[in-house]
Image (cartoon, rainbow over all chains, first blue to last red; front, side):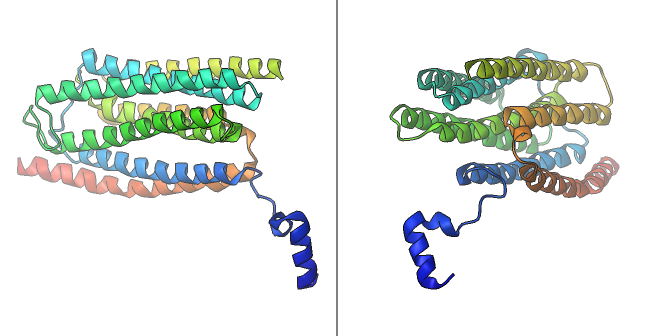
Length: 213
Length: 101
């Protein structure tokens, strides 16, 4: 095909005429989210590995989490986050089926559950502050690195949850005003499920492995 | 369409219950007084099962083209496996600290 023919073809059918179809059969925004998720998974993998390294390499490591309130609080947080994944699925399914009102209700439920998770998490942090825990302060006399490791990991996860709640609110507003579509809801859902997936590792490795028995 | 959505939601609820049960098993095992390394192995296996279920069903990776799965998941697993070279040094450090004490 000559250059003039190609230009004519582009004029008739847009730039798509020169583009190959996606090898994954998904939209670029969804692929971008997947790439972000795997890079973030490696980040969390590294930080959890460092936590495990410190734990294995420190003989007098702390196990400060009592069943009540810490582990019970962690179980409630797990339940809340898992349930928010279910409501997110409801939002995605309703959006794909074109039921906008139902999708927005499910999104609202997800936002509420995400906010509840963040509140429970922050409440636990304040409880630990009251006991004397700080980034570089251990009230039990054990290794000071415990506080730094704990607050870094849970803080990074909490930041993801808060970012997710903000993203969900923006998506809900955009979707309700037809500025965004069902694909945006699905892509944001991927992120939200990833936040849940990370918690599936944070809860056993950071809380349960450090439960006082 | 409506019935498809309804049946998918029912299967999601089943998976959600399964994930909550796995989290419950993790807490149960924590208080069974296993040695630390055994407990870590149990919890990691259960966490990977939970993550796999969430990835395949909640994140719909099961319903995407296999090329997406094979491009993403082995890469992440390879990187995570490569990070495991830290363990000998962690145990060396622990032994060293015990000797000093």
